[in-house]
Amino acid sequence: MPDFEVVELGPTDHPEPGDEAPEFTRPFVTTEFWEDRTLSNLVRDTDGPTILVFTPMTGSFLAKYVWDELADRNWNEGSAQIVGVTASTPYGIKRFLADNDYPFRFVSDPSNEVAATYDVAHDLDGMTGVSEPRIAFFALDSDRTVQGAWVATDWPEFPDYDDLESELGLA
Image 1 (cartoon, rainbow, N blue to C red):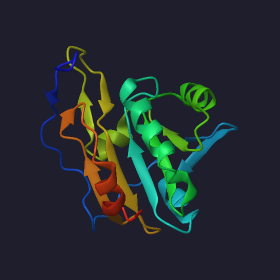
Image 2: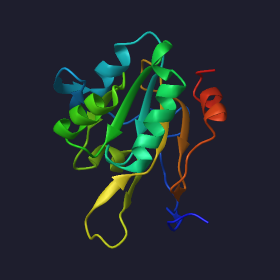
Image 3: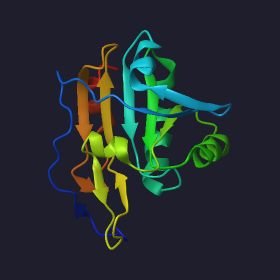
């Protein structure tokens, strides 16, 4: 039995394959700098798909588990661009990247507006007005068209990563 309660997150109306992913502008954070970038610019900057990976704040065990798994699977070594979306601030993301030596880049969404636009935000139990993104993956082409999607329905829930790689076109 886990030490925590599994919570059903409820239905979501997130973007599905064939939908245009909602546009946003947010700080794009690497280990070296951050600057405001639009999603349209991010998806045009790569030869392969852009994979948006929504996770809770970077210091959470859920986020660490997801990013460790993606690093172990070498998702950064293919033609896909992997971009995390988290409610953490740029300062928190830079620390997380430096502490973990991850090769990924992140979008800082401390207001959780991007997660809400993608309908993957959920309220934290017992905290009025505080939300975080549920774990979610969206594969986008250079026109922001969703090619694949996986969204958690429970907290905590993780995908079957082998199936996910096929669903997102990474296998």
